[in-house]
Structures are given as C-alpha cells and as structure tokens.
Amino acid sequence: MTNDNKPGGRPRDETSAPAIKAAARRLVTEKGYENVSISEIVRVAGVARQTLYRRWSSKADLVLEAFFETAGEPPTLSGNAGLTARSVLEKFLADVFDSLAREGDAISSLIACAQSDPEFCETFKEKFVFPREQMVRQILNKACSERELPPSADIDTVTAMIHGAFWYRLLTNQPLDRPFAAALVSSVFPTRPT
Image 1: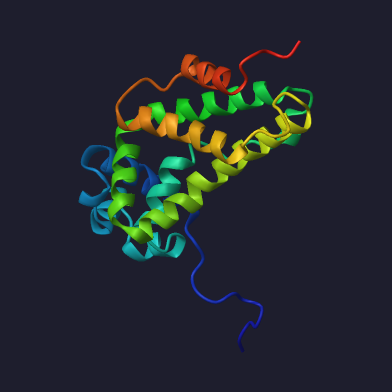
Image 2: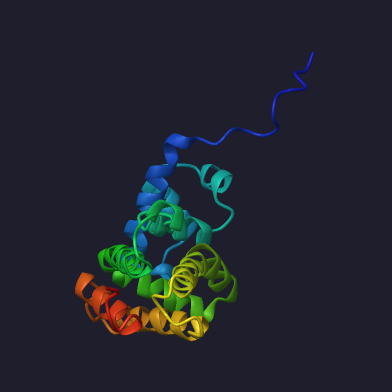
C-alpha cells in the first residue's frame, strides 16, 4: 500500500547547506568563479553531487546565495518608519558597502564572469543587483514625495549614479566604507533637511 500524501523525491538535507556554501565561498575567494567546479565544491564540502543539486540548480545559484546571504535582504521602508529618506539611504548604502568590502575580491571576480557568461549575468542581476536597485528607487521616490528631493528629480539617473559610484570603487579597489556612503548621499541630498 502506498502513501499518496508522501511528497515525491528525497527531501533536502538542510544540514549540508552551510558546508556547501562555505566551500563555495572559500574556493571562489581563493581561485575565482570560473576556476571552481561543482566537483571541487562537493569534494571540499564532503557531500554528494546530488545533495548539492537538490538545493541549487546551478553553480551560479549556489555561489550567489553563498556570497549574498551575508548581504541580507534589502531593507523595507516600513522597517524604517520615522527616518528621513536621506538617513535610510545612507544606512542602506553603508550596509551594502560593509558586505562588499568583506568579500570585494571574490565579488569582483563574479562581476567579471558576468561580463562573459550571459546566464550567470542574468542570475547575478536577478538575485543581487535588481532588488537593491529597486530599494534605492523606493527610497528616492519617498524623498521626492516628502520634498527631501525636488518632485522633478530624475530617479533613473540618480539611481544609476549611486550604483555606478560604488561598483566603480569596488572594481578599482578603492575604499567602500561608511564615510564614502555619507559622501555619496551628500551628493544626492546637497543640504540636510531642517
């Protein structure tokens, strides 16, 4: 007699996920994304290949989750009630910079790979770039609606400027720190609200 309520396939082994992600982070940091194989990751993690593929469909999905889980999810405006848009943006950028600064070399290798691997590029944009870009847009729209910025502010251009500044610093090995977050925000909001 069969159990019709039993889900198909073997369940994920959640206890192996931290070891797999740690192995992926370490290997990519040491060797760069393109020089690391799934075989090497599972060997270092001490798991079977099938264990990895039960949770991640590709090396790109695994590596991006492994690196960007420390960056956390982009904050929501509802979690920052009562703060000015300027303050929310500065905190958001400082948190992103803290994460990028810890693993800048490895993330630079991921960005470089995204330029030559269209599939990886799409995953990188979907999992990291676009959610944070959307958060910046929401903060800037809040700033316009609350008159911290002029209602006519060009949100697309300001968003591109913010992202361009920190990706440029990352790729040229310049500091990504809280003073730079404050300076970048000051260029968007030239005067503090009274």
